[in-house]
Image 1 (cartoon, rainbow, N blue to C red):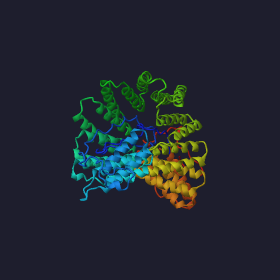
Image 2: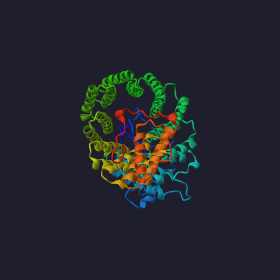
Image 3: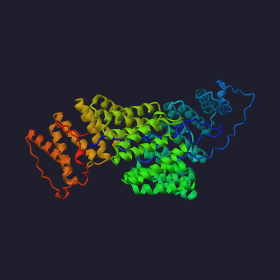
Image 4: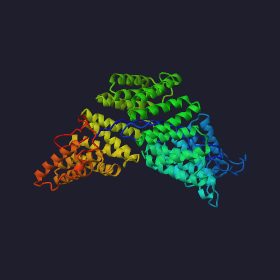
Length: 604
């Protein structure tokens, strides 16, 4: 079973910001948490996704009919008795906005926003009519909590905020509810809870469609935003469906070759590349490039050239890939400078290309050039950019049998992301690769600890059912075997089997690898009958569906014969399906045949 490989950090989002609206305008789109953490992929991620577009301003609810502040009334923000004054809520929100604008900081603003929400709640209409002012104040309060890094405290505030509006009462209520769901989704995203995040986005989209109709351009923006969330969660079919809908909407409302269409096509290319549809991805990127050229966006054209180079490299069209990378490199150097992280990212792609074509000296040279840029980044460089580059370079070092150097780079990358919100899944992917590197150099205790930490983060982020999660469970099981923790290994292999059967199917090589490891574990535990049953199941799958020419078949057959001999039994079935003598799915060379431990027959 192949080991884990590179986990590339997807595009990064802008820094956190607090956007406190005017006193009577509830925020219909949170600005402080506009990123979604990536899910670690068991291979190099496709080309970077275009930056997510900001949501266009939503129609605010009508101006409140509350009278202007009466100078004779108590507006002391620290007075409990004043909370029942209907003028105090807007006044406190203005103070919160001024506190942020003046640089007093979010702590003071938080106090004002808390009291504002209390005032709006006390002054709610007696007839029970929902108060949009209250919803607005809760949105602001949650935004300030997030700016302080207190995402857990923002969640209950937003859950309360989305219960305040009543969408059937009209567009204002519907869009306030939409805003709350999107902001809550962003907050869950920053906590690494991807599944809950997507559920909130889906509900927000439903509310928005009911209020504005399916063809409204703002619905298109939401569809694209949600599509990117599904890409990060590796749910590519749903992402493709949403992206197609976005393209259809923008065709109606935008000029041909618009920037909106270019962004949509870049995202569609990303999805197609992830699904292995490289030719289709290439078509979308070429159209996106033409649109960017028409709009004079040279830097964006260069970014698309990098993506085109990635597609060509996936198609093994290395000369065309080299040409695309060199074009992008020339533009980035002239527009951004020789030491910009964009230049370093192209160096990394060139290093990968030269490694694939066997030019190892050139590959190492480009790696070193990229590392020099990352060592002294220009002001304004995002830590996520550097961590992503280091992770990619570590994959190259790993592939040339330099695991110690690869491990050092992964440790640097993880250290850069430790204090960054919303990066739990990325860190989990890096830790999984660190576990593989430690395993390769024989540091099994460190390997197991890295896998254990990675699995805990993946469970928390809702990725406990992904194929990648199953692969990590299998790798941790192997580390447990090396530490003679056989019972623990059996539990891990069994959980991995259930996940991979569901996500990949019983005939997938990863699933078969787990079957083999589980059979060896049962044998080591003395559960010979279970081991025999598992190996018979594997051989049946190979004989009837996959063919018997796979290099693993004879080994598994021999192991089964030994177990049957020990148990005093014989196998009562013969190989069949001679038409499948040559296994079409077996593409491994002799050098790539899966490693085994002769005593137990485990496979990594």
